[in-house]
Image (cartoon, rainbow, N blue to C red; front, side, top):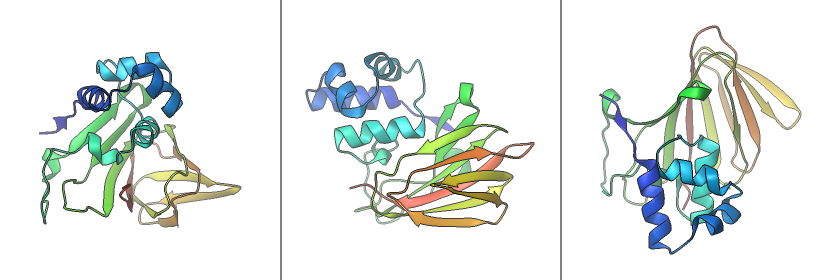
Length: 183
């Protein structure tokens, strides 16, 4: 059974712990006060890009919003126990593949997108990133290059590159994303 995240609660707690107002966080993250308020009240789910902006502004890894306050040498996560962020109006679901390792160096996500769904990843991290198409097709746009990723195709790129993606198959397309964990 999928676990739903309380991203809003974690965001509010982190913001209050750091004594940062919504207005200040809005300036730091480039997001509107209204957007942040809706996320904090769990009225809307943030996109992955929005979570990156928030995590960067607060100086935490994006996985902070998925963490369960544990640090282990080994993490095993059953398929139906993954934490999930679902953006229903966008037709995108992001599943975290595991967090909580001591000094975790990698983050893994599975992105499931309906046909025509789009996403953007800002080039803000310095580590490398791996995209692997598990099912369907994705168009990946990096600078002036365009790649059609089909099942089994991989794309390895530097984390500082901006890229955007679009699901390009009739059914759901599934993409594995593995990257260096933000410190």
